[in-house]
Amino acid sequence: MRESITIALIIGSLRKDSINRKFAEYVVSQMPSGVTINEVNIADLPLYNQDYDGTTIDSYERVRQQLKAADAVLIVTPEHNRTMPAALKNVIDIASRPYKQSVWADKKVAVMTASPSSYGGINSGLDVRKSMQMLSAQMMIRPEVHLSRATDSLNEDGSVSERTQKYLQKFVEAFVDFVAIADSRDADSNNVGRTGA
Ligand SMILES: Cc1cc2nc3c(=O)[nH]c(=O)nc-3n(C[C@H](O)[C@H](O)[C@H](O)COP(=O)(O)O)c2cc1C
Image 1 (tube, rainbow, N blue to C red):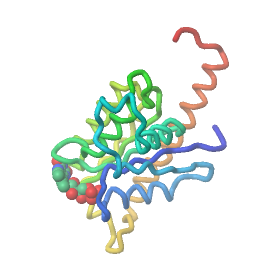
Image 2: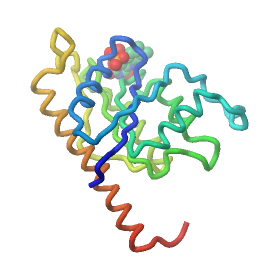
Image 3: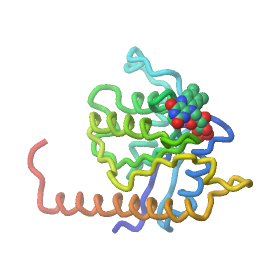
Image 4: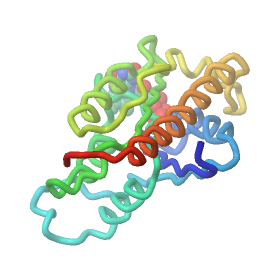
């Protein structure tokens, strides 16, 4: 396992009191030493337009570089109208272009969702997975974390309930293993020599 891992964090909600941000903050607090988390600010990104591909937009370059530099990306997001929020789709599109310069190819990605509803925002998570599959990212398959009735998992002071803490700790362990193990496999395959493109 590598001694240090950098994870880019994307929170799909722009809301100040976002419940997803609260769960993300707990997950971040549980990361072992050696893991650095860099949040990718998506609130100031102009809507993606292919006409911009030939120009330099500072905020686009910032997120592309942040994502490129990260060993893995953690997405914590709500569901908006049965899919991912527009702001999240926007950063996925921005980082997928210009053509053939996508940052997502082979990037290790995990997604978790939370919603006050009983479906837990699962459609948002599934749609993230669908885009990531098309973009050739390496998605963490399990555990699938879609926190339903998520407001019940928050205490009055906004902290995460003990029961959900235990659940999220398993997610953190699996994610760190996923990044580290997949990474050492990459190193192994590099050692034996890769052929092809
Ligand atoms: C435009 C909009 C659409 C929404 N659509 C859904 C939905 O499809 N499914 C769902 O579970 N919740 C939906 N919600 C409710 C959100 O789950 C809820 O607002 C949640 O708190 C958002 O997460 P956040 O607190 O992290 O911003 C929607 C909310 C908004 C504002």
